[in-house]
Length: 102
Image (cartoon, rainbow, N blue to C red; front, top):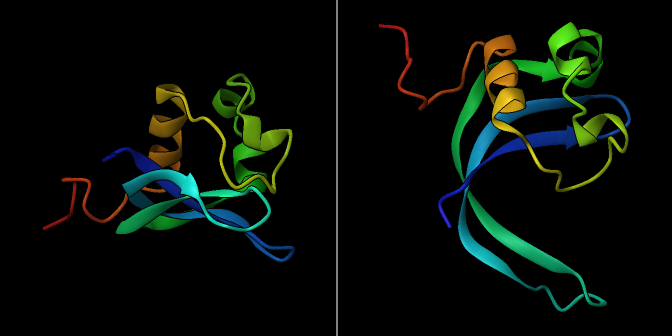
């Protein structure tokens, strides 16, 4: 619990990271044909959403092997520290990251 995660819109019109959430309840059976879920709480919105297309064009992101590039509709993919930092950089950080402008 307490892990930070990106909140990703995976719709047909807009595939982008729009915010950050934290895990408040670890993985449990959601009662839906063997599916599982985690409960999350909002931490803050990205200062600027980061589109999947933008991430795919970024040289540093290309080299990362980010799983989201292979299967962009997945609900859960691992995020390395390198990818986390680059996405936050591209999006100008997120509300609640301690970098709020005064």
